[in-house]
Amino acid sequence: MRNPNPKHKLIRANKIIDGTGKLPINNGILLIEGTEIIAVGTERDLPLPENSHVQEFNYNEATVLPGLVDCHVHLNGIGDGRVGDDLALLPDEIITLQSARNARQHLYSGVTTIRDCGSKNKTTFMLRMAADMGITPTPRMMLAGRPIAIIGGHLSYFGEEATGPVECRAAVRQLIKEGADFIKVTATGGSTRTSLPLSASFTQEELTAICDEAHNLGKHVAAHCTSTPGILNALDSGVDTIIHGYNRGSDGILSFDPLIAERLAKNEVFVNPTLYQHVARSRILKSKLQSSSLTDKETKELNEIDTAHQLKNEYFSKMRESGVTLVCGSDSAWAYYQMGDFNSEIEAHCQIGMSPMEAIVASTYNSSKSCWISNEVGTIEPGKKADLLVVDGNPDSNISDLRNIVDVFQEGEIVDLSDKI
Image 1 (cartoon, rainbow, N blue to C red):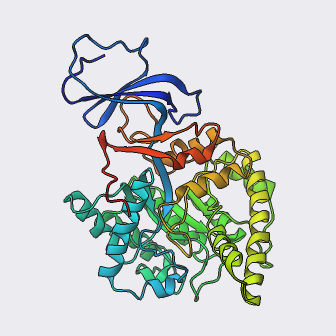
Image 2: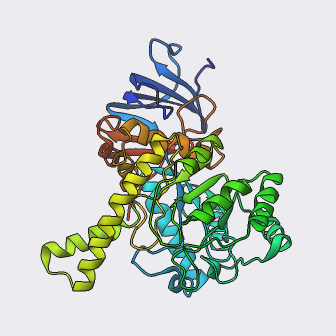
């Protein structure tokens, strides 16, 4: 082990969870050099040279784990319930400021890496430029820029519509030229008013062109899929992450298909189930019900949300049991789900049968793999970036302890939480 010097930091913790799913290290130590982790273990395993000059952090009553990785956010969102069609009408300057606010909220909640799955024009690229200049703090950002959509398709209002394989390839090249880290495509319709959520949007030929071009340029593809035709097109075209992943036919009924689950598992396609997204609205309605009454429309909405949520839990529980790798992505700040509460999505994974440790892996290591950056973040291992979350309690047995934040480290430096929103 290299000799520590003033640029080293030594972290002592009651418990270290490395994110791989292995048993925690009790009374662990972690050595950081600059921005990277260089050693992790116990003091007996990693004796330090005497009289070494090193900055020490003692978390003798706390747990250290990897910084959380939210593989699905929309930084442009406000989380006040407005639909994307209306959000996109706001000026880019306002949307960029909101994106900065969202990024800061997520970072302060322990999320050190985010994958933004679609934004208007160049707003998030401008945010990254501001972050690189030190103007505003953000998590590490994996950006798609504008999502690729068909004309009038889901998220088409953000600015990248394409028709035919040639335009699809050109869209991929243009986005990567502008700085996209991956490609987001809407393989079905969604909440966009002019889209059809139960139908495939792109043809398989178009979607294959997008995936081939992205892969040729070393980028991965994440696809919004809310129906069976979209999932099948995504599987046939080589999509790397399927978002939502709802197996629904023309009748709109969610049903588990073991053959599709088998293909997802065999092809090692990641699925981001967005379990909490609609529950956020349910909690708002239930909170209102405690102090007043709901309208008939709101009562109907609440009942529909709760019924759908139960069906989704059963559906994704079967997905998990079939060996599909489920990764944590919040889909905030879309609809009513505000950023800064990734914990609710993680906790929702425990409701479909994951243990707390499995949910931690889903929101760190597996999520980083779906973003193609597991060589940098997602686990506490030598050579990885020192992105860390320190919490009171034992999240490996009580997942809600992830909310008890003590400190957040980003590339070896403590994040200043004093101006938390």
